[in-house]
Length: 85
Image: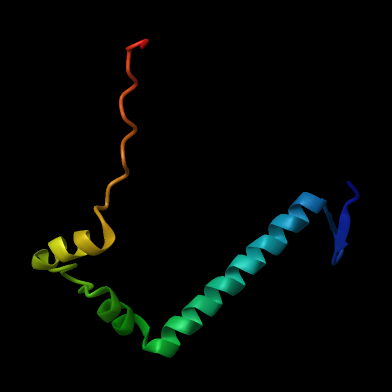
């Protein structure tokens, strides 16, 4: 692939794509931060998650959270059977 000139330097197309993607991610992060701040910042987020930044979630809320969201576990694959039936 042909190198591209950026300023006085030449960079490969792969490096250019990586650079553009990094800028896109930074822009997206800035938009997320702006949205969070427009809603009330971290206090708004803590209220929405029903948690406390110092103490975490209340232990008495765990059964309701599991009922609503499921357990916070990655399901295991069932063991492979040795049966050749």
